[in-house]
Length: 116
Image 1: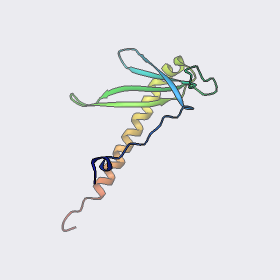
Image 2: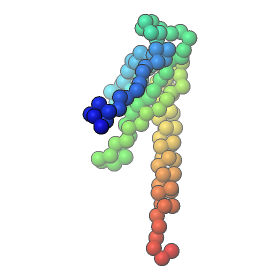
Image 3: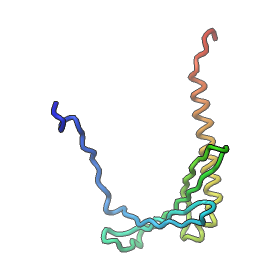
């Protein structure tokens, strides 16, 4: 087998009908909000699609452990996204805890104890 045959090319292409411009807003304290503005292929705004807001923060769970949290924020504008940021983060953290608990439960159910 030649070297070229051994390397597969990664097949990918961007969707020109699903482009967004990204702006990041932060308070340098709690987190940041990414605002994704839909754009046409020429870079102009696409008024037919909604803005997308994504909240990001970090939660310290111990002295050395920090967990990144990223969540969708259902908002029409930046001010609404700022107001909804805390609730969106808390909901995402609740989902993360439930997922971790479920993974732990599944992991524990696979443990085979000799003699039992």
